[in-house]
Image (cartoon, rainbow, N blue to C red; front, side, top):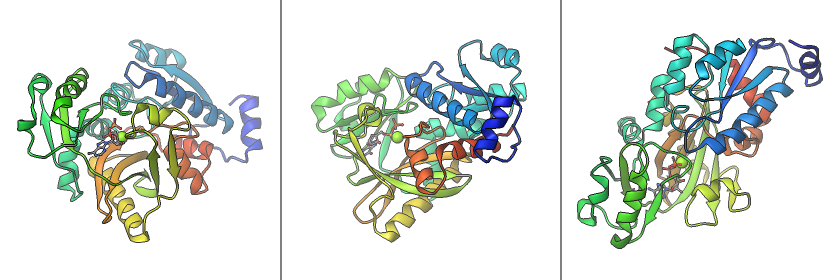
Length: 323
Ligand SMILES: Nc1ncnc2c1ncn2[C@@H]1O[C@H](COP(=O)(O)OP(=O)(O)O)[C@@H](O)[C@H]1O
Ligand SMILES: [Mg+2]
């Protein structure tokens, strides 16, 4: 560890960690539709880790990532990618093959978390409430009509393997269906059409299997779309979520069940819609949730007395090979 790093650790009163003095690669950027989000996540995490005294280097993940990791002499990878190739098990498989320990979920849990049709099957198997849905192949999607759906409008159309609400549409009537399906089908993978659920949007952070808490999201837009997620001032957040105590406990427990159902590690953000009667409908598990200091999981952690740099350090300390 360099002198500056040692001084920083001393200033922040940090005990020597497992990766102190080793080269930590913060993997960020990448080639997915969520590249921009990951650029922010990566910078915030690298900064936090440096504050904690770690030797963190940012690695923008391109096709040459294996060479870069070897050239940098990386001991451990902190995964700050989002979306395809970063969140779906691909980079996890590469890191396993290279023998580089990494933060977060392993190959299988990552692949499952990214795949909404697959994860829904596991959620249901684990006893969670899943909204009624249909899955259509990429090629079939554009020709689907209202008659193919066993439930009424409004419905939600979404790509099976994206994130950040990319390609997600709320469709209120049959006439809008085709355009939404075509857009969702322009992304990789299958297309999901599901029943629209009215309720509170609640997201549960789970760290190493235990729920940290649940935050409520109130977008001023029609739903929690890309703009609502990333433009400051377009969404209100309430932590803890404004739910009766029993409903709050129920959604937190459902978050832990979802995290476990996919076999996740590290931290996850588990997205729900909680109906008036307190039923938590699981939408998805995010194995690499947004991770700037103002993102939801860090907000929840901070609300639990764990500031952002401590959260990053905790994740780094949990880095491992899982295969
Ligand atoms: N079945 C649904 N009913 C109501 N709103 C939904 C439903 N599915 C998704 N949404 C809205 O769309 C947003 C994004 O959907 P989600 O399934 O979480 O995909 P993403 O992986 O893109 O975040 C949710 O945060 C919510 O606002
Ligand atoms: Mg979501």
